[in-house]
Length: 76
Image (tube, rainbow, N blue to C red; front, side, top):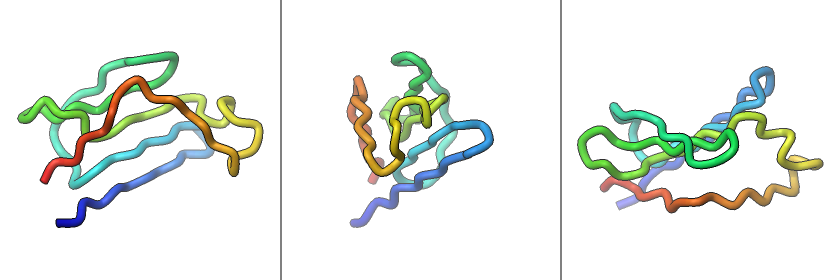
């Protein structure tokens, strides 16, 4: 079964959101400097992440290297 990944970048707000699977009810926990994990309310699994001030983290948007303190799990 394929699991979709959605990536959305808001240039005006300098905000990147990555989500795996369909949108779910949940909440965000801060896990680092302007980095948040999205947690599924029912399963407790991490299903996405949000990064504020994203553009400041790389000089060239083509060269992206962001270390995340967690693993995103897909809900099947």
